[in-house]
Each structure stands twice: as C-alpha cells, then as structure tokens.
Length: 351
Image 1 (cartoon, rainbow, N blue to C red):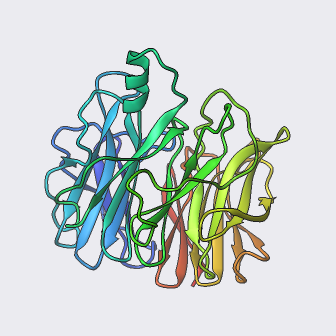
Image 2 (image 1 turned 90 degrees about the horizontal axis):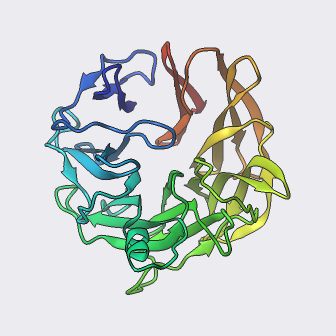
C-alpha cells in the first residue's frame, strides 16, 4: 500500500506499507522544487502506478491569485525509490484555475490527467459573454509522464470545485464522471468516455447525463462523485445531490455509455458524505464518513452480487481530526483506508 500526503510542515510525502497497513515505513519527503501543494477539501495529491516500476504523483500547486493553480506531476521509473523533478502537465500557463486534478493509467499504459480549468470562462468574461461554471480539460502521456499531448477540452460548464472520478474503460481509455452545470443551472453529473476505444471524434467526447437529481443550486457543493467498472461492462457510481429537497449520497448503475440504469438508491446513512467506490469482479464496496453529533464514523456498504444487494459494515469511529476514506483494489482484494490524527487506518473489505 502507498499513500501520498502532506506532513505538518506542508511538505509532500509518500509512505509505504508492505503488510497491508499493519505497519508503515516512515514518511519520505519528496522534492517539489519549492512548490506549495494543495491538500484541502476535495483537492489532494494523487498517486498512480503502471507496472512494477512507474509511479506518478500529481498535485495542484496554488498560484498567486485566489483559486488559481497549475497541475504538477512527479515521476518515478524505479518503483518509487527516486522521483524526477516536477513538471506541469498542461501547456496553458495563464494564472487561472487549473485545479482538482485526477490521474489514471489505462489498460494500454497511457496516462490520463484531467482537471477543472477556467480558461474559457476568462475568455468569455473578456469578450463580455456569459459562461456557467468552469470546464474539464485533459492531456495524455504515452511515455509514463515524461511528456504530454495537447490540452484538450472535454466539456464546457463543469462545476467549479468538485473532484473528478475516473475508472478504466474496456479496451483502454478511461471513463470520467464529474459534477456538471446543466441548463439552466442544475448541478447533476456528466459522464464521458475518453481515449482508448472511445468513438473517434475530432471534438469533445460525447457527454451523457449520469445523474437525474435536478438539483438547482447556484454554487458548488464541493462534493464530487465516485466511479468504478461493473462486471457486465457498465459502471457503478456514487454521488451527492438533492432530489426533491432531500439531500443524500446515492448509488446507481450506469450503462457502458454512462446512462442511468434504473432508480438510484440512497446509502443507509442520512449524514453520509464524500463516498468512494471500488469493484473487483462482482464485489463492490462503498465507503464514506458521517458525523453523528459527537464523533465521525467510517462505514462501508459491501456487495457480492454486482450491486444488487449490500451489507452495512462499521469500520471505525473517532473524535479526532480526520479525512475522507479511500478505496483501492489489490488484485481481487478491496481495501479501505482513512486517516485521523493518530495515523492511517486500513480495513480489508474483500480479501
């Protein structure tokens, strides 16, 4: 297991466990060439692997103006023993929003990086035009993060401060899901297939509406979705939204093209927040945190039948400062991780 986070001095670190979280090596500080590193809300460092040797870590480096930043990437070709100096993944160098990065290697070893970008908003403002929200942009690297292709716009009118969810797509490429601003101002979620076997299109990829809460809110809830592949070729998704005045984190099935399949289900916790989701074959796990008025609880909803039925599992409870839970897949095992002021906690949900 690997984690990348900030220490008490705000320095980017990595930590490794060789025994599934029972013990951890001491945190190792990485050289970010003087960059400050964002780690707040849904903006935190990301780590991804390709084979036994290639490790990349992305982060947002805040710039001088409020809410501006650039997406930076560290690359290791020796399994994380050393890292090359950080590089900026996008070619646009304006002092604007390039934030909320998401990275993933696809089945063909291509590295995909996506982020929230406001270059089109700034251009619209300069010409006196209206522009809702921000945009989703992306790049690809075919050499493990040494170089990147052109900045490509995925979609106009994304929400401004929610994380982007990525999942592997069959045949290569990735599926992406993010909170979008649909007309006139509905903050539901959009889905797109990117790269790989996605249909050839000289413009932006086809965008599908993946959630149907019809939540009209004039602002960003800072609460992005989770996405993972289903065994039948579709996807499992979790997201937060308001539907007919009822706020909840919901789980739903999506088709291979991202369309909703059947009604969404609320998680069995009215105060659930910042859920993550992961799958391995027909096993699906969802984790989240919630506050019961006295302490934070970490809980899991686990399915062995591809999301048809779930069992609730209590993972932990703390009154200390804490973070959102994460899920990762190791082979066919599903592992939950979360942090509080005492350190990293690990639970094997599916062996």
